[in-house]
Amino acid sequence: MKLKFSLLFLLISLFTIAQDEEIHSIYFEFDKYDLKQEQADAVINFVKKLDTTKVETIEIFGYCDDRGKDAYNYKLSTNRATTVKNKLVEKGIKNKIIITIEGKGRILIDEDVLDNVPEVRSKNRRVDVVVNYKAVVVSHLGIPQLYEQLPKKPIVGDRIYLDDVLFERGSSNLTFKAKKQLEFIAKQLNKFPNLEFEIQGHVCCTPYHTEAFDRETKKRELSKNRAERVYKYFYYRKVAKERMKTKACGNTQPLGKGSQFDRRVELVITKI
Image 1 (tube, rainbow, N blue to C red):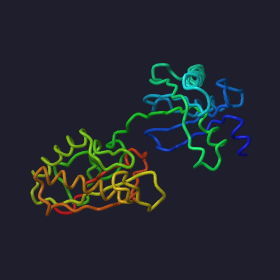
Image 2 (tube, rainbow, N blue to C red; image 1 turned 90 degrees about the vertical axis):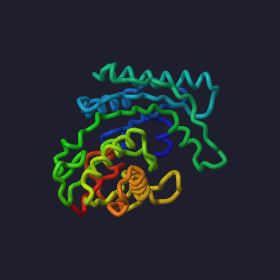
Image 3 (cartoon, helix red, strand yellow; image 1 turned 45 degrees about the vertical axis):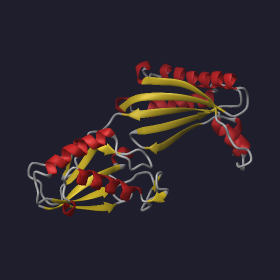
Image 4 (tube, rainbow, N blue to C red; image 1 turned 60 degrees about the horizontal axis):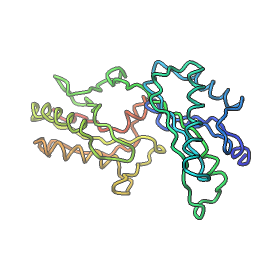
């Protein structure tokens, strides 16, 4: 299988980030950028299965192995990306949603560290098709007591999904958009001075009941750190600490609507 894999290029769908992003990798033979019939058919099948009504944009990135000169590899990787783009357009993908076609050149490897250099090189001779899906509005999910902001008449058990407080993979850092939403929610919370709540941190894309690594601390504490980061921001915005508790949920409570909803923090009302 390894020999076949290194000689042929295959279309593989990697559902690494279901719904918000999907990556399809097309592997090429050494020094080639043409599509053979078998692999062209695989690209066509990918297009047939794609729900284009949900696609926001498509990005196409070409790569080469570490052999050859840089200028040649950039040209070859660009040709690979262009070949795949042309096949997608030929089969009905609209040009306007393909926002990037880029040759990245060669991917360097460390031959002294890797066990199977030929196989690694074969995987680097590829094009990645990155499909970015349209955002789903949380209010359309139909989940009881799940809101995008504090209800006018909150009750115990209400969950506040903070749609701008979404995190990069492996990160607990708050973006500018996240801070703006937290500032707004803090003002809402201070209109209900007796309301108490739990800040729940969540992660995606790990085996069930497995906490994720925080790239900054190098520890498996990512959902904990996300919850505590929101706690500190609310405290900075004058929300009394006695009203808040934090909980690390890991990946135990996926919403089942795509991982973009699971790299999140929720507020759960515990007392009115």
